[in-house]
Length: 300
Image 1: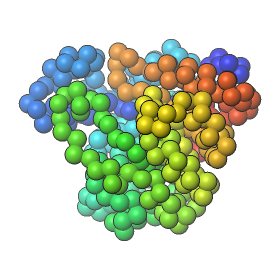
Image 2: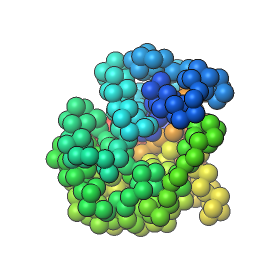
Image 3: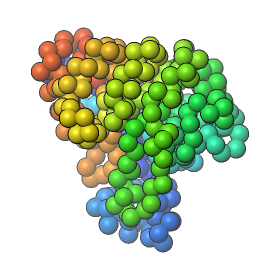
């Protein structure tokens, strides 16, 4: 991609794979069909074959000259959709899966997912209502640490699932389980395992920085519009300046939080983040790390 620093490979660390099965799992709670829900949302109906959706995403990345993206299975149990997407376009995607460690046999399930090729397991403590330091979650970290080139993604801070809100579905999340500080002892216990905290901590920015300062295996994902900034009176330039000061360019992962068609890849997020970093005067080497080099180094 042509960037303000010249041409280099851009990789997106945060794209939700809103598959047909994902949307069906939501509409089943309302009695709507997938087509009805898509029309209501103003979306294109996801194709039933996830490989077709993968090819649509590959074309979308081509249109924006994005080399590769991490695809997140966005409900537990939808690993098959992302696995099919990665199999269809293996040179374009890394697979991430959402995981609820409170369900039966978490260690076996995590091992199976990561051994099959998934690069990261995504934990949403506020959604599934558990503390990340709970002993029941330990098998996730233990199994992920056994395989090279794997990571654990932990959503902290404010959690708002826009599609659930638009469909009028309840979101009984519990923010008591959202503090990045909860991850401190875990990250220290598994120093060889990379941990990814998305959205700069999503409102727990200070705490995310404290965590990253203490744990060199913690990475901050820059994705989304970062609307949480209004809670602290921050702007994106200031957020990047503070994150660079604490974590450095080598532990920031560019992401957009793209998710559905026809919007596709959210180029506005890239443009806003690039503008903020240009204004900070960062060099091409650091820009290349943030916009893809770090993710490529983590997963190859």
